[in-house]
Image 1: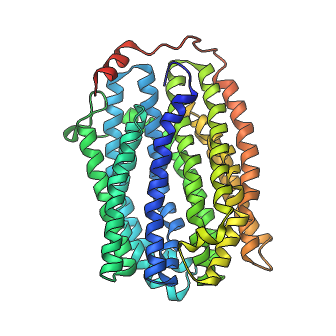
Image 2: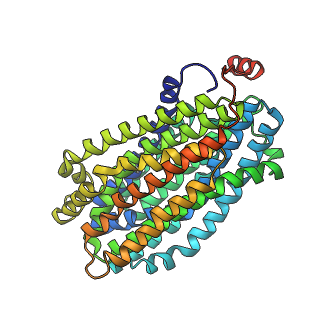
Image 3: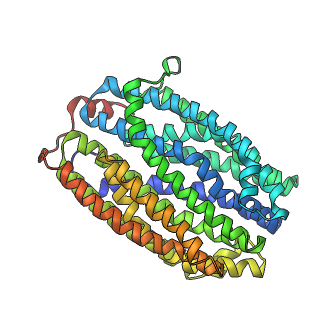
Length: 459
């Protein structure tokens, strides 16, 4: 990450992340497709309605894993091996504790939160059952996310992808067996997801225990280091809060969609799959920006930080736009993968037209926010995104949609909020970067020899 041309390295780092996200979403989509095709529209709505709720529950700790990525990557750039060891141990401890907390939370709030969201009565029972079983997999999910963040800090995005391939195959196989073979419906989909998450957690834990120093995980000494934990939380909590607030706004939107009936909910859930596919491109390149900017900023290579930001922005805009337009060229075909219900297909097509087609706009604030986190400024993008994606959307629902709520009016909040947030976060990035790079930095990047030799010697 610290020497040579950057564009090719960014692509090599980002492509496995993109493939991991697309693969992960493919398995989630398989859950929804199996539920919709073999268990009916109500099962499709039950599984799909839980997406924003699950994101709300887990996003704080997903954000903290970003903090772990930034801290470890910067320490690697500084060549501080002992602090890297402590940060790895701290990240593992946070993953385990956070996963157990999420398990208890998910089981406890399943029914109250779904009732508060006015989930249609014919869907509520199935949705609660799905969320409670799904929550059993939260500890495994956190272990994988933090483990993948540790590996990404060292520039390794391939092995997390391979792990997802293995766990995804397990997920699809169990879906086919439990839902189609044994007729378990929503319960079968949830159980398959929990087992696949467990597989990914076990594999990544074994890999980390066999890593070369300083990236090796020693379970016997897995305890948080106060200094590392404080720094991880300083960067990660704002990122997690931003993700939670983002999910809160989507939960409010979900409540508005729920009020329009199960058919609308099912159509929205079907179209949402393609937004997730496209968003994984943006998210993967944002993670790439965090890792590369963190290491180069830690090493004092400020010119490379500037170049990395611009190249990540171009890659994100182009990659997501290609997918957005590609999916929208044949809306009936892509929506038809998840349902054969004509009414559901109409609403899926509307969401694709008003939201998916312009989703690439979100690159503006995601990449700028990621670059600021790589520089150690995590609160600024959080505050701006909270305003743009939560406050603005809630105001929209209570003003534009107050007197006459329609599906189209609800969907228009996405492009409007993306555009406003993008302008604000981009402006903030340029101000923050000017301050962060004021010292000038190093102009000739050279890989630290000890670290370079060790990585070359490691298969």
